[in-house]
Image (cartoon, rainbow, N blue to C red; front, side, top):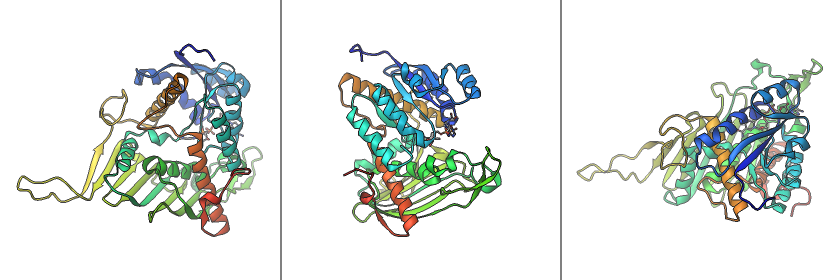
Length: 398
Ligand SMILES: NC(=O)c1ccc[n+]([C@@H]2O[C@H](COP(=O)([O-])OP(=O)(O)OC[C@H]3O[C@@H](n4cnc5c(N)ncnc54)[C@H](O)[C@@H]3O)[C@@H](O)[C@H]2O)c1
């Protein structure tokens, strides 16, 4: 690698599905929304799987290629939003070629792969290892983290984590894509519970210590588009879990892809000794705060009754961005901010500075611990017993 400070970051993209397609807009916008981004993002090669994907990628300004090696060839930074079972091999190849790696969640299809990725990342500390737990980028979750970790609310006592979607419900007749195949680590648990466990840790620094769960598969067969036949589905579409945290704190989690009325409803309520924080993606820049101490007083000294305060966090002073102050932001904006935050982390790495942020990226190590929680919940569901999360280890992990 050159010792001159880089000015551009060549982005290599793996896959041109939903997330891959979104990245064209992300790369286009990052330097407009974040004028202080340390590098200019440039589209390089996109690894595609069909002529149709190649056409779309080329229209969006990428050079379509048909192998991971070609994708990494002229990239400084790789983002491979591929089926979960492909994350590990791409990340290992990226580190081997000296390319920064931004991976999707869940980190991998198995705990063994997640561990291998984390080991590779930690053996190659010069390169970024970052995971797209994108809801870390909401200004409201950034503020929740600040409040929770300030200590003013006291210790955490309980939490409720939820992520409900409806797209896989039976009436939609969604075919048997990779999202429903065990080897690809499909299932609501991997897909949605991973976001919930990361969010809990991001906001509070807490992780489940023991977990007990039930997983169900409501839609038991889906059509295999290759053969036209109905085939059994082995992955869960709903997971309910309860867990113990540090001290006496406890929590529960509910994730499902079959809940009508919820397109993408990711939320938390976290209770502390002196208040509660509540957030829902449906109104993503709003944080609800209940301060049990109240604090506001009438001129005669009488305390105003305590209650919920609604805080619009998409304002300057809450987070460091160049979006229109006070105006609604959306998923794509979070993705743009994520790319900028990854650039800041890369800049720190390449300049030999410690990366510091009020809204830090999720590392492979963070995502490995999330994956351990998901694996523990699934083991509990399978064996019908409470699981000690720390006992769930990858092969060869101490
Ligand atoms: N962070 C988030 O908020 C978020 C949101 C959605 C998806 N994701 C993650 O991004 C990754 C990709 O998800 P997506 O929604 O873009 O998926 P997608 O199905 O829309 O796209 C998958 C891509 O992989 C390619 N592919 C290669 N082998 C395949 C195979 N065997 N079966 C199917 N496709 C194959 C497809 O051609 C396509 O380019 C997943 O890991 C998913 O969990 C993350």
